[in-house]
Image: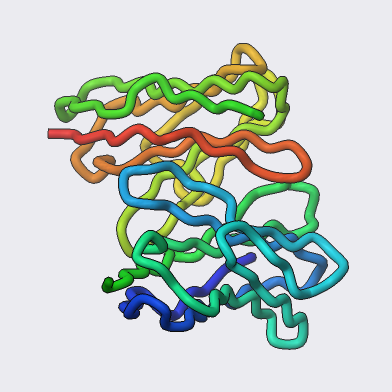
Length: 114
Length: 110
């Protein structure tokens, strides 16, 4: 079965600090990978996705993620966070089984202190 | 843009009630999904559907059923609501290149 692990449950950073949120998945085949963000009181929004090609993916709001196949990882990064980045971040994976089911990690809550 | 609409933002129901959560998408997508979101557990798949009248169990189907009579509408049914079903429920639809989520229904069972 596929699974996604996000090891950081709650991250607290000061503004302008750099961010890296870990995501590891367990699936040996071809995967599609996603990062979603949920701002307080709002619905899930897609930050970025990886389907194929360049393993360094750039998303909205200055976020990027790197797919490292050998490590089964898809970590999210941002060089300088802002207070408005305070949110919950979810990593998710679709395995190429034809089912298109999205498996989510448990989420990482990011708090940015002004 | 694809729009996924969940009819209720907040619901409060009593234990034992039958509860219907409605979800409508406007882009003729075949694949639709129901998730529940709980703190520390992320999003977990309850049921999904590939087409009209078709349904498949997800990871946590116990206590739930679904209905897909029309392509655009996917309903989640709690046959007899229990307090452990208090949660945020998210509907989604899928078509390449990705998912679109509704804004969620926060259900409280008292």
